[in-house]
Length: 366
Image 1 (cartoon, rainbow, N blue to C red):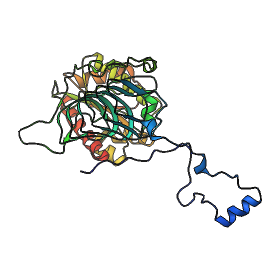
Image 2: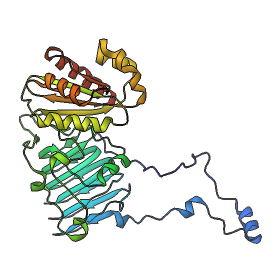
Image 3: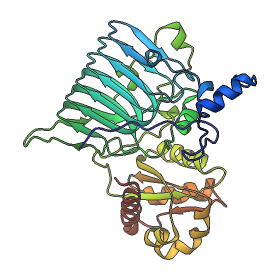
């Protein structure tokens, strides 16, 4: 598979298409304008603020704590290279980030609209949120990850993955600016591009592995001003169990339909079920068409199809003995009057989960 290429960031406001963009006037017209005192006219390309790549780079640092505060990267590309024993915090959203030849660094990367690419790094510990994640020629890395697509490792060994868990007040809006859903996280669905027979190049971190013990909170005054929390219960991203072995053979699918409070309702459902001791296996936010609903919800589809026009659905899989009964109870007591699908019994619940997530993975190309 080839390298990921960065995407151009969208600028605020509507810009003309290539065919509509103003072209500079021909030389004769420019001369006439100057003679008429019209030479001071400015074009859109003159008004754009010049970007200095050095402002979006950490290069050759050693034994330092450095970072960028919210609103200081603002969707630009960023480069981190040849750093050793550093704590690095990008507390903003960006377009793409490449990390090359870094050793023994602790790195936090806020939401990245495109790809995050680690190359020739070793002994690094990271917290990363992105659309695409890839390592090449890396050794011994711990990564707490939120990734919208399947993470890829290549020619890499000793890579361990956990679920992204982090909070600061600006982080939710940064996810939106980067075009990332907090519910689309395939952190544990790893593809090893260069597997070696009989060897395992990656594994999952223990579920009780604490983020702050891997990537400490920043200790310099400027970065300490950002109100960061690594408490899993406050994480912007719901902390999921992922592809670790499930504790029970009973799972329940719960689907919230788009509305004013769908995200808040999904979070409330997660809090209620986690409080009862159940595991949140996976989450997904995806658009559905009527034919998709018929395939997933079957004879219940007609009840939910009108709601699909309002936007994407949010799906949650809970696991544990009694998951179906407890989900039904929480919905009845907490979400009365809210349009929600939930598995009706244990015998059909695993089929519900498979139906929905198979559809969602195909829809998202995973």
